[in-house]
Length: 178
Image (cartoon, rainbow, N blue to C red; front, side, top):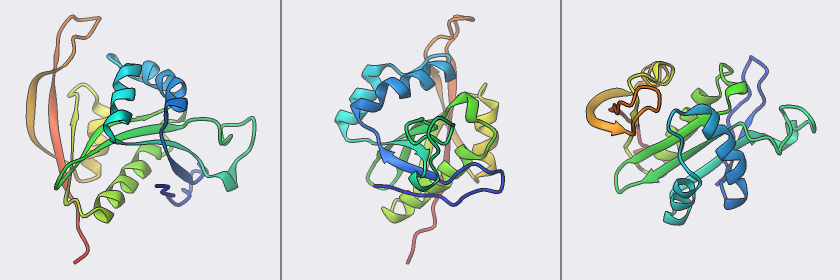
């Protein structure tokens, strides 16, 4: 499935969602390792692909591509992993390359994910987020997600503190066509 979002006024190109494959994992891992205290491993991503999770790589649209720039269609901007359940879509991982943050890419990705949930008749999206990930929390709250619970000691130990971190479980109802 390929999903395009519209261009933004800040000049960042239109996004294209391409199915993630094993070929993409090195680029995905490079972003993952720069972005997270406890990054997913290659095995985690491979397991998601093998399980049939909806995994997407986000790159600039081909019609706006400029080789050798951040608009190069070979440059991975972001990715997401979605787990479709019976009546909800579980967002497992969403990450934007550090050099491309603050351009609205994550917000545009979230809007596209909401569109996928609506297309697939899934009335709710759920996710877990670290309380210390204040940027993600702000984004999810801005997008209408609400905290519905928590998971104690959900995240692995932080290598710096040695402490595990709880997760905030957030959800958003999706308006479905009638």
